[in-house]
Image (cartoon, rainbow, N blue to C red; front, top):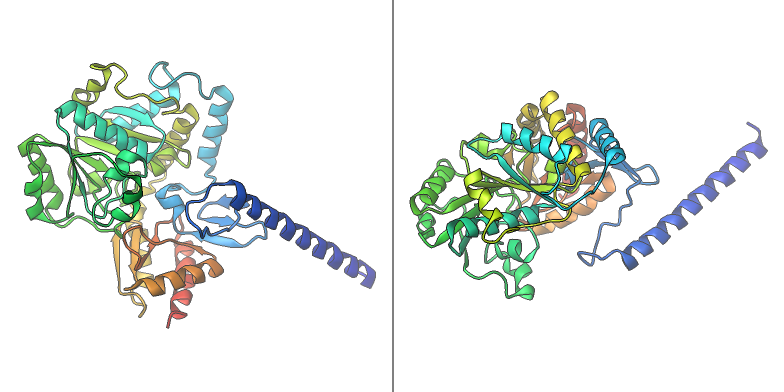
Amino acid sequence: MGVAAKKEAIICLSLFTLNLSISMNILRKQFLSHVAQTSPSPMLVEVARAEGSCFYTPEGKRYYDLVAGVSVSNVGHANPAVVRAVQEQAARYMHVMVYGELVETPQVTYAARLASLLPGGLESVYFVNSGAEAVEGALKLAKRFTGRTELISMRRAYHGSTHGAMSMMGAPEGEEWKNAFRPLLPDVQAIEFNDFGELERITHRTACVLAEPVQGEAGVRPPAAGYLEALRRRCDEVGALLIFDEIQTGMGRTGAMFAMQKYGIVPDIVCLAKAFGGGMPLGAFVSCHEIMDTLQTDPVLGHITTFGGHPVCCAAGLAALDYLLEHRVVEEAERKGALYEELLGDHPAVRGIRRAGLLLAVELGSSEPLYRIMELFKDAGIMSDWFLYCDTAFRISPPLTISDDEIRDSAALIRRCLDELK
């Protein structure tokens, strides 16, 4: 290439870079001006594409996605099987009628497949659009079936931001989010997760106890030995329903398809979302017919939704579930989580690691190094996050399909960031 041609190429590249920068600045300004924000300090990383365990900016910078949309993208970004299912179903039909009236193949097939995997008569699936909606439906169902009003949640629990779900945020940690939106649901109390003594607070007034089998936003807190068994027994003794929030732990995250299977406890109702939709917005609450059928009468339409169980979302979720099963992805989650623990656990900045399958909280001991490492991660190409009720640990919950090489490479980047905390 001659000198003139080289200069022309350099000029063209410079113009392209300048135009890209201008375009990105305009997009960010529009994002801040017109897309309602959840905090004063969004990350402002623009996503151009995502594939597998990574996403990329318009400039081509790669980020290891160690959040996976908060345990949503379990089968990886742009999974070909899921993309194909979405495309094919969208070409057949999308929304036709409100939920529950027409027989739509993706809904029926997914519900039947799910029922075949869930234990203990959990076979009636009510599709909704999100995790918060699943929780709302489950709470209504518990009150309708039992005729009781008291609702019990766990401290440091997060179940969603709608009024009912927010009411179940465990006090006092949830007060920061709840106080500005009161009054919320009445007759709600919170007990301490893993505290056997507090189970006595579950009484004959209690409609339901809502619990995560593994507390997520508390910073990955697994159940103590025998705790879930004791919780199940206490609910049975007083006639309260046990609801498991498996929105984050379901679909393979903890090393079993559902955490209830890992711990051997069957709830009366289970809430599902996040990875349940294969990357599309989908949730469900699932129970036995004896309980679920009470929503049909006195009154009829006891719970309704327009878009719940959208056929394209159900097709995506079914394809993701089939992928997890056919490729034995779930069976590898425990080993991959243990590999991260092995690669990071000996770093002097790490005070400990709490883990359930491929859901990890890497403990740094205080909030100051955590906030610092979030900035270091952003520069290094690592997408992580902290927990709503634990600002001393960072999250590792990548797609379950992440390879061993990607685990080792991302762990090496994390260690370099940890080194800078010294």
